[in-house]
Amino acid sequence: MSEITDATNARSRLVAAAVESFASKGFRGATTRDIASAAGMSPAALYVHHKSKEDLLYLISRTGHERTLRLVKDAVANSNDPVEQLLAVVRGFTIHHARGHTSARIVNYELAALSPEHLSEIVGIRHAIQAEMRRVVGAGVASGAFRTSNPRMAAFTLLSLGVDVARWYRDEGEWSPEEIADYYCEVALRIVGAHR
Image (cartoon, one colour):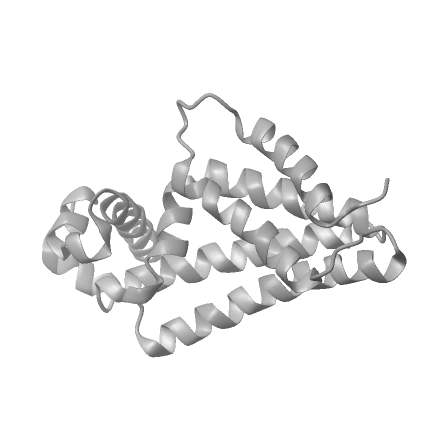
């Protein structure tokens, strides 16, 4: 049992070190030596637990995208009211991208470094996230709660706002994740032309 725990701990340390290395140097700039060193391991140890540097990026990206999809689905499931669903998704999505800004930057801005097979899988998850948001906006339009000339573009815009938080947010910044989420909820209602 101890060997399994040690292996799990080593994999987790390598993933955390990869996040740190990719965040500071970018995927292309970070070396396997950088990652192993940040994890307190030898460069060879990385290959004991992961196939490659790209495999680490894929794991980080898949985990981040799956977590985001769950967050969006859970937010939608909490209400049948499209306005409440929209606010819950925007709030959760924004806070998630602010609090996890370091890994979210890697998840969203290093996609080009993934292998075609891995990229295809991640794109599938991204499409599922987009489909959830389109359903919320579409339901709001169908019910008369939202008035927007382009529901698909509105949904895409709302997701883009949340993702972009990860690019500029810093822990020592002027606004908390919750303050940003409050403001983005106001903006979201305007984007969809919500009637409250």
